[in-house]
Image (cartoon, rainbow, N blue to C red; front, top):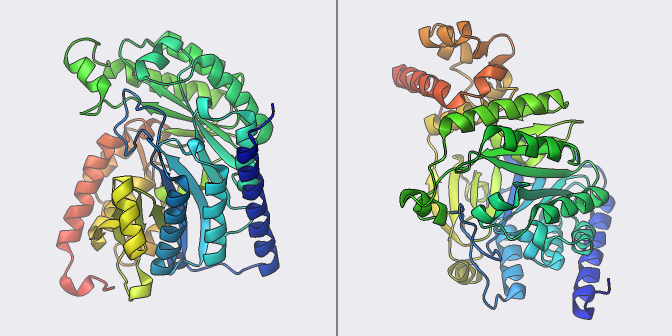
Length: 442
């Protein structure tokens, strides 16, 4: 298929920018490991979608005359600013999310990656993921994103049933989804993730499992299962509230999840996180940073980040949220170099709560060594070794505390939320009992 001339020129430019970035990385030679406080993942938010899906309450907008060149400049500027403020010397992974970032120009992706590579060390083999929807991800377009530096795709299939896709307000059909998946695997073999939703109104276990089985016949090595969450303000929430649709059945959703994870395990997938399954080592290294409570920078309207602002002499990790509305965010970036709307310093206890809650989402859980990086004095044994509740959870086969650390069993991962109530309560209780002199500073 012939490309429009202006589009082709843009994609060629994107490819040249990616080549310059790779040459710069090669010229720099091997670099030693950066300390944990100088490493981070980078999330880039593209705020626009073709339409708003019926279940979605994310920060996204329907484009009307978007000035992509201006938006691109602001994404580049904010990335440069936050890298400087954070003191980050090495970016481990980049994730373009949204919204629908596959609607962006590959030139925009290449420009951001080139800016990151110029400001810090971005290894040539870093994971660079792009979220894509089937209707905005033709084969030629996906190839252009690959030339721009993307090496992993996350495709929002959500369902392989056309009636369910219409219910969800998706713009693609099941056939579109499978065609896009085939093209993606051809271009990014072993590097394609797919999302499948469960727990929809009126959805039944048997038909949903048949969708999963169909997906397994053609998918790559990474699958994410997400239960529908009815969010206030969405079309689907209103339809259920008004009785136009039945409320999702939580017991059926739990059965789908249990049956689905068993099917995936049988197919050779490792459930390495509550919602994520991989085989052949195809874990998402970017999301792994979140679950290990590593630093990450959030660039773009409404993006979230967690990092220590080292340039200003900071020693405390901050939760940062960028301005939501794209036009307002762009004005702030042009004025101040970034559009950070909120900065929330995290207390030591708040950070430990995140380490506990996020780490237990993974099959590895929290190792003793990992915990000590955040809390060198109060060990996991100190916290949970004598806890009656933890002993009961161990006896029930839901939790393990041993020489490796603290982690859920395969059965425990399915009921993590209920386990966290006891574990977080115990952490808070132990923290309050500490003497002031034992609390480390900084």
